[in-house]
Length: 574
Image 1 (spheres, rainbow, N blue to C red):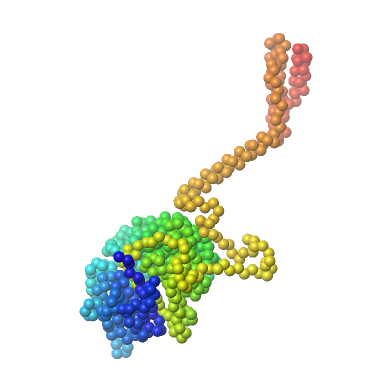
Image 2 (image 1 turned 90 degrees about the vertical axis):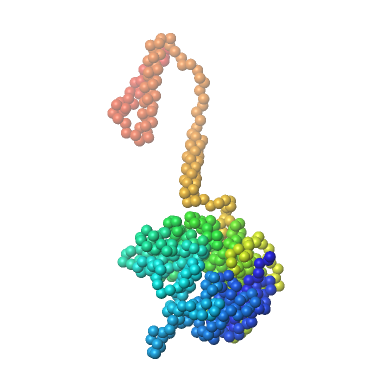
């Protein structure tokens, strides 16, 4: 059976609608567009339910046939969410109080989706903690628990300012952050529910300085957390964005600082769906992008480019590096297994990007209030072809687009194509534009000194790239030692050969027997004299080289003429 086509929810000034995904790209026949201005919408975790609030009521329908499931008179609802088992709806309204009601009414409610009865109400003033509450409710719903006024488990840790719950199945884990004070470092600790008691209950701990705030990101399998620590001000004055560091923390107790080769801000950090690798976009523009493994070693370096975001496909086989915001919207689509570039489309003025659950399509959108002109969205194939485009009429606005989610495994990984998919709208492959050059450098050959910044190619395009698996830090260190030793040995050998070539080769002397006098006693005297003269020659060479001779050695040199005369007399007597 072929997998279904995901729907795309669209919310704007013209109302809320559901659009069938590619290849149809038409409005969903079972859902009637709500022309009232929607405040919020969401799908259930499995994508079977769709809920939205339009300023008058909250509606929940079944996606398959559009049949209504629940309708609540809650005109001020600003956020809503579904429990994992699709049994409870969570709604939140802005907290308010009056003179007649100084305490205010509970603004966070839990509703039974089948009966519409109110199950529980809470006071929740801050919207920033609403997502945490919903995650907590998801944990309790998966366990079959029900919210009561009694505290079941409590983590006794002072000054906790941030905490993030792990995704996935039980047992649930939580990462907590405590900022440093009075010279003490900040730290992040990992705990596993419900083991919160005692100093040794933490699964892992990582302390660090230079942190005004942190962002913690769990991987899909809840094996490790990436912590981005940021300071508001860089005391060195090197960066306007402050100073940032990236830390790795695993539930098995391992921790490390991720070493980033280029200085500058960290724009984006994202985990691969396989939970074994993560991609970081960092450094002053043009930014670098690098994939690391769980040992925080480099797997692949994408070089530099105009980018500030990274997005893995749901199956993890493709990676998009993009430059949105104040950049031109360039997207680089990479095959993660081969680390080859598939396409390089461009979506200027985009404020939103998301992968379709099928891993084949993406959507980019220009939404208000970030940009109030040229609102609209495009549906792409990852090869760079535009399959559908919707431009909002002048005077109207687009606020949000959202793909319908599906359970893991619904869409299997497909073979990657490198040829652009067919489309009537064509593709938007980036055309090579000539870089600006000052008048003084025009009509002259380009040189390294004339470039505004250093451009670094991807790892597979650098000279000498072999495609082999990257070496570990220890292996790389040993390899450098071996190469240095080998180079020193070769240099020494070359010096020896050069010295030998510069030294004149003596003329070979025939191996003739030394003449003798026939008297053994005279021959012995001649041999001793020659031996003494040879020693004197060696002493004279040492003296010429600057060596200080002793008194007895100088006396030997002075006797040279006398020894030569004795030798001459003995040889003449032969």
